[in-house]
Length: 258
Image (cartoon, rainbow, N blue to C red):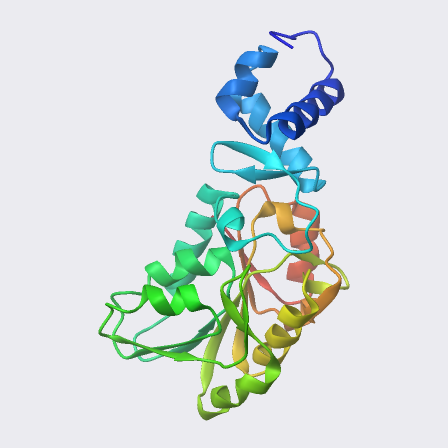
């Protein structure tokens, strides 16, 4: 498969899938050399394949698409790394000292939480063990965790029975990642249990903020947890599809691209 520069894009992408499936992973540099095309071209190929759930993008390359219903947090943290960094950092602008905010167990929330470590009198409500652990040495931040059963893949606590504690707080903003955002389904998740928790929490938040990269637009998961018209702000990247952004804005959402 060396230097196959005369392939059509569809042929090249099919061979990329085959190579990744056989080898378990592939880097952008490796594929660029293999097919004799630029790294920009390979990144575009991988983006298209990931959008069709044929591979999983990682930092600097790709791995085979998992057949499991949920991707582990470790794998998800390696997908769209640069985009999530920009999205999470931008989302921090919506958090002020003295706020009470909810952060879910999404990989983008893990970027956001790092940008909040220097806040003062901030209360973070979460069901994510990793979010809570990130604030162990942040003296200006209080962390309140919901109860529930341990979900190992997402390092979070699942179940609506443990959400009663959140009713003690006036939650200004809830930040939610998602498997996808589509119309009319709204924000969706692959896990019905995760969606149930997010749906209940979103109803407690005065402001709902979606944190989604371009690959999530138009994707539909099995379970919805927030209607499109319930979204106040969507923070996404510059590759998000213009047509779907227009639909979100028509329903009242403020869309920020970073």
